[in-house]
Image (tube, rainbow, N blue to C red):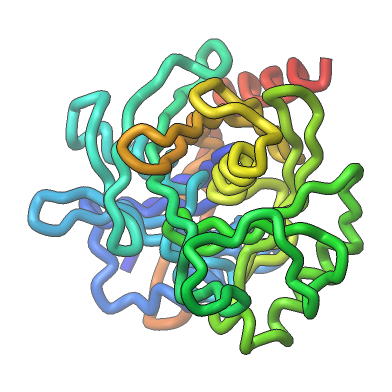
Length: 312
């Protein structure tokens, strides 16, 4: 079987996109495909694979981590899937599914001239079966310590389709973040299915910087649901305001988040969906070969200019 792929990214979070509407992947072991495609030595190299899927006329996303595990939601990946879906739906406003949830999606004003930008409205819950550290009867976990994980950091637990804990720090320590991410895997009674861990610096009234250890991937340049969760957590603890854009940056780029209580707690995540290259994947059961065929040079140039503008 031969299928085309597009390499893409949201805020520097790289994915291999497969359009299974145009090219079904029937019989392909998707966990093995993700491990092979994401391998930066023998494969294409990415932080995960995303699939555009369609069931009974409803378009959606499936996302797999580099270790082959499937994620319920990916805020950066779903923007890339939204761009692929828009070509079928032919509307700038639609709903995508992922992990059993529905996510209102819209084409938005470019975050930088010439960069395709999409907004994903993400419902936020403050409870989850993944929050084993919460006491029975708790309706939220906001600005509290998890003693077994770290005796001083004050975490806020956020469920945006996948689970996150977020702590504000004065300066991000990546060694500490790595330690926290691995410690989570040892504390299975508190984190039964693992969790995404983020550290956040507040850099302005409505401006934050985020670093994340992703479940199934480790420290990545960017994680869309982590940026969403971090902005929401900072609003919940009173460090950023509701109903005003929050500028959220990380090592991969930047997005804008808008947190609101209207109609229930939810956060709009708006950011780029950039295509960087395309190629062909040859699949034979669980064996895969990849051939790059071309590049989206202008899109790459524009995103580099966007990142440079952030530094200035």
